[in-house]
Each structure stands twice: as C-alpha cells, then as structure tokens.
Length: 416
Image (cartoon, rainbow, N blue to C red; front, side):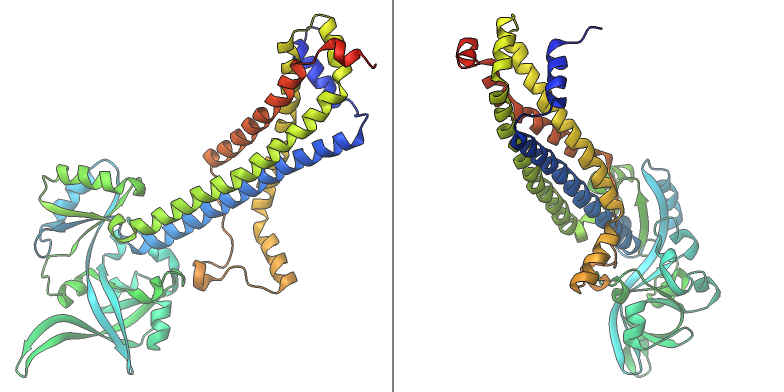
C-alpha cells in the first residue's frame, strides 16, 4: 500500500522507542504542558461565559433592552405604537410600563426604589422576572387592588411579609385643603422576588399593576413607555437607530447600553485579556517541543544521513519532523480538549473540594449573584483554542525540521 514517505517515516519515528529516555521525558512534558494549557483555557472561558450568561439573565430581567417613550410626557396612544413596534423585524416581545422613583416606608424604615407598573401577562414577553419569585406571584397584581411585589432584600429592610402594608410616597404633588403634599398610597405586599444579591436588584425595584401605576403617577390612560425584548441585545444601538427610522423619529428610543454599556464592555475586555494571557501558556508549552525535536534530530542524524544518500530530498526530511510535531500537537489537543470539558463539567465539585480542604469561600452570592460556578460551552471559543494550540505546535517544529533538512550525510556518518 502506498504511503507518502514523509508521513510514513514521521509516524514510525513517533512510535519508535527512544534510545535516550530523557528525550521521551521532555516530549511527554511538552505534550502535557500543551494539553494542560488547553484544558485550563477551555475551563476558564466556559466559566466566564457562564457568568456572563447569568449576569445577562439577571440584569435583563430587570433592565429594559430597548424602550420606546414619548418625546414629551406620558405615551398616550401606546396600543397603536405597540402594534407598529411588534411588527418590526427583530422584536421578540413588547410590554407597556409606567415607572417612577418613590420612597417605600414601614414602621420607621424608609427605602428609595424604582416602582414600575406592569401588565403581568404582557411582562412575560420581555422579562423572566416571574420565574424568580420567592413567595407569591405576579398574577396577584391582577387580583389585588394596589398590590405590590418587592425584592427580597427590600422586604427584609422594611421588615414586611406577605399581606403586610407599605406606604409608597412619590414626588408627584397633590393639592389638598392643607396645601400641596406628596402623593401617598398604601400598598399590600402580594409577592417577593429574588433576582440575586450581587448587583443590588432585590433592593432597588418594586412592581405594581399598570392600572395602579397610572393612578399613582397621574398618567390617566398613558404610560411611561414600551419595553422591548429583541433578538440580539448586543446589537441594541443599531436596532434603536433602525426602529427610530421605522417610527419616523416621532418617539424617543433608548436601550440598555446607556446604563450598562460600560459594564458589559469591561466584562468583554476581561474575557479577551484572559484569553490572550492563557494563550501564552499554550505558546510556552508548545515551544518546549523545539528542544525535544532538536534532540530527536540529533539522535536520528545517522538515519537522516542514510535517507539523504538514498535520494530523499531536504524538503521531505523537513516534512518528516513537521509530521512528528503535528502528531504531538494533535495528541495534546485531544487530551486537553477532553480534559477541559471534563474539568469544566465538574468545576463545582473541584471548587467544593478546595473550599473544604483550605476552609475558604471561593464564591458568594452576595458578590457574584450566584453561589456556584456556572459554565457554558461556546463552540467558537473551543475552535479558537484548539486551532491556536495546533498552530503553535506546527510553528515549534519549523526550526528543528529545517535543521534536520540541512544535515550533511558525510559529516553525520563520519563517526558512525
């Protein structure tokens, strides 16, 4: 059976037992170093992807991806606007809201929060906050007149439970016989949600029914605006421009990047820098192949000389050792890929073991939103890591392969 000569000899050299055990040791360490670098990089990137996804789920359950507001005052004809927006490409859901700043008080405790009026049914189209309920449900807002849903931290700060009353005070003024006073209304707690402690969401937001918000903020039939869920949140800026043109620039279009753009840019920068730094580990491990291949070239100098005398070209000799480097890189890549996936899938067990042994707390929900290590495999990250590792393995073979191709038969066989 025909085999390409360089591939055939390269495979034979790779399988052959070394006369010098130290060469085998160096080759093994090089392979292990590349595999370890790949495994660590896959694990780190997957965990960072998991954190990124958890942060997005938490943030966008509370923060609007895109909003449509009236240029001046409440949005009156919001049903018609909602129909126009809902038909725009890229819109996954639309829901009305009416929000404002207010003070919540109970038994001497006072907390500043954003009180948002929502339609519990339509809200599911733009947010999954209803899945984060600790007690009660958002459906109770439809059943209870002037009901309110609080964050868990907010409820604890005010010392209220299900069925308790809280006083909501807004900056809007009411004219009374005794003068102009702030608007004050008592609400009944009908639910408590828990979106996470790390970003202060539980202490900054409260929800009421849309009809109650219209009364509280004196909007009449109007609302603050429409909240949109879109296909790609990271294209929110371009989407906002396109939607503004679609609506003939009659409304104010805002998106999450104005409030949280810098935060997510920092996360993306951190991930990119971590990727570059850990790539250097793979590069260092890959270039350890240079020393092992140089020693192999020296060990095989007599064989190379004999091949040259038989008519094998320097180019073929060079490809023999490139094949060896490529095989080592492929082997390391497979070990690293399998090890990285296995380590990532068991990362919480590893973290728990470290915590038990060293008696330390690696992750806390009060800082990181969650108290476990999430992960998410992304094929493009894995492809980048494996491609870079394989490329570094090939680059590391160039000098030893070139040196082997320059071997002079007469010099190599002189003392054989």
